[in-house]
Length: 170
Image (tube, rainbow, N blue to C red):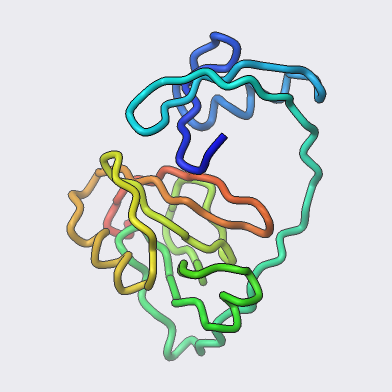
């Protein structure tokens, strides 16, 4: 598996959306082999994998930026309050880029939590590394209301994708 792979089938069973995959995988015994069909760089390919048990982990959230409520950034169109990672946070998390989700306002759907780091935004098949809150908010501001975007996130030691809909922060 590679970052950016989109899983479309598990042992021939179609995965219609990201919320179906965990339900399909949880019935597979750890140690079992399955074939994943993934979409990678414009082509479908089959990959044999061995399912492992995922250990529960308490995410090691990076230290918050320390902004006071008076200085706190406004939520973007998705209802996310973002801050740039400090050099210390980048070193602590072993990252070259990304922005920290400080807070969530409104009804953000998707698997995004305060403390997550947004590494990249995927829109219409194009992945863009996220280097600053200003950059990400600028990209989001140009998208139509109702458009969907996928974020590549880091939480603790795990990286994953979450798809969200632009809702103007409503």
